[in-house]
Length: 555
Image 1 (tube, rainbow, N blue to C red):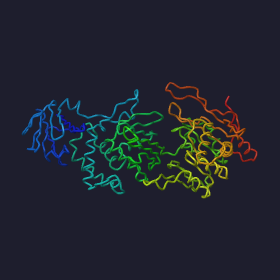
Image 2 (spheres, rainbow, N blue to C red):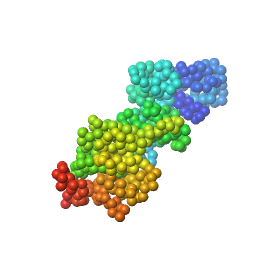
Image 3 (cartoon, one colour):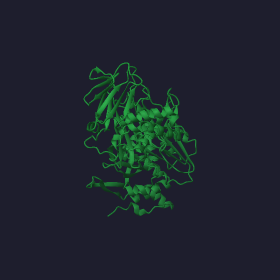
Image 4 (cartoon, rainbow, N blue to C red):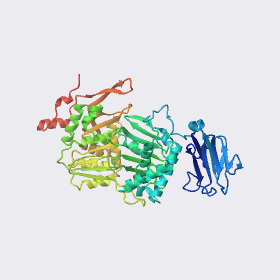
């Protein structure tokens, strides 16, 4: 016979416990009890509940405050039915057996798909693993593991310390043996064990999502709502956290090793994971419905221009042209919206830089993955808890000029550092690159101009535009298409200035032709026929290593 006990606390939270056939579970305040009720009015071994062939029963163990059924205090053993209301201390219990237990006792599952039928990521994943019952059981097991390891206080740092994994595994195996009878038959023990290990020494429910190679973005909207982006499509997942406190503990586990801090007084933080993935977290009181976490994952495999060609992000002539532009030390601005693939493209462009050159990268959060021998990586630092010690992107860009760089690569220009970047490009550091947020090349120039103004200097717009026109050679516009794919939609040359207007000409564009039956964007990359000025200069000097046919329009 299958039997389950539902325990409802005063705050409305429910827990579920399975009773094996012909077995009993102890109820009490003691940690050794099978069903622990943390209430001073509950005796240490208050009662037992069991299942037999003729139904379920509960038996009071001469407790101080008593066991109550339907308002009547009982003595000894009493048979109970699903309709009976059982009270022990501040807790309400109900017992179901047979069909009732199988149908209704599994606890609340992870939220069902919503948002007009949003698909569920990895439909094979058993959402029962994240039911209320299993989350509560996970909490009990983890508490037991910490007890076995004699770890108190803030366990996250201690338990994840180097060399602790074998001890944690041994303690977990012992704890699982002790509660094995409480694990539903539908749950795979090894899978449950893996979930527990992720919680103990990993990043909890995030760990399997971070290991999935097809996921590019993880979006957490509170402990119960976790979404991912895979191959350009957003999915709801079946995983969830064991409450807001659990979610915030995982956030702390991410930011603490980096020296970052997040709490109610400083409720926002940017961080990164060991694999370079970018993390942004916002906690209450700023987020009203639980903590918000966004993780931008980066592919473990280093992408190349051949990968982008295969994905349809650019054409081979475009790749050959960009390779020549980097080799010949043109200054490049990669422009695009959030999630359009700017950083990925910047990584790929950086691969074209000759090994003999000294490169200095400057980033807010380290994401670039260059492999050059003479490489210096700099990362900005936020202020500490006292508001001291902040090092900005601009501070670092200014410092790079004292470090004898051949090229400077700034992960993203978003403020006053744009002025210093332009000055560096105009003072002998040709071949430098950066990114900015903009929807098209013209908007990218306007954004640069606005960012220069943020530096606080009273510069006329004509002087700023002159700086931009002489510093930037190419703008590469990256766009995230409606089907989730990323494409270079324009490669545009900056041709100088005329009457206070910066002149632009497109070298390559993307012509969208529509959608196929699977709503995938259909289109092609085409050359406009325009030949950049620097290509003519290279040809005249005999230094051109590019086949001019790449500029010939098709047809």
